[in-house]
Image 1 (cartoon, helix red, strand yellow):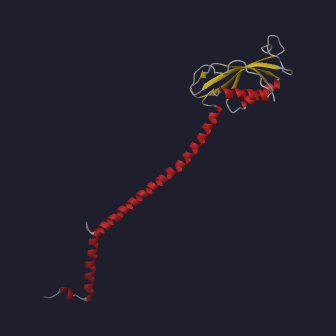
Image 2 (image 1 turned 60 degrees about the vertical axis):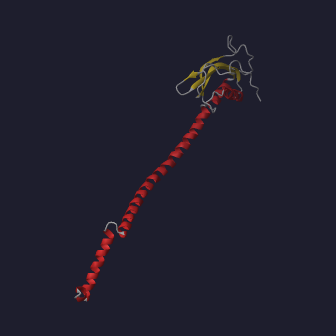
Amino acid sequence: MANPFRDMSVIMQGLLALAIAMILLLAGLYMPGSPVAQVRADADTAVQTRTKLNQEVTQLQVYKQRYGELKQQMDALNKQLDTLKTIVPEEKEVDEFIRQVQGAAASSNVQLRKLTSQNIVPKEYHYEMPFEVQADGPYFNMLDFFSRLSRLSRIINVGDLQFDDPGLSGSKSTKYPIRPGTTVTGVFTVTTFFTKPADLTPAGGAKGAVQPVKKP
């Protein structure tokens, strides 16, 4: 029986063999279910997954940078909050406030005669804690006293100033022994602030006359 393949020339046999090989190769690459097609599909899936992961990593890098910025902002806000807690504390801290006022008076060589607590005034975000103060001393010493109050770590407002000449009859300072050099006596309101909800009664322990501050 004749074999057509053997009757072909060598060149034709080579071309036929190459064609068969290409057909087998293409069938292996694209025929569903073939091992090569499965490997190719897995490779395509892996490439798609890698592309998707790269996109997610890029997005997360943006969030990572944003997180660093937000953390810096939070640290700055926490520092501001600590500062605010110093100048406007949560608690009344009446004793510390009185010590600050007495210290400012002592440093200015001003005599405190009275430090009387008034009713606490509630505001929307804080509470006002006023004190009626009576003090006397040389005029420029009184100015220095007010200046020192303005530089205290806690916010303090001074208002309702009423000054008298201690030498005049009827002056509020006549019932106290006046020190030499005293030229001004005054009654004024010193107000400080706190934020924690509290009862609205005057600050305990602060009502009445204060003891004279001993000079060093």
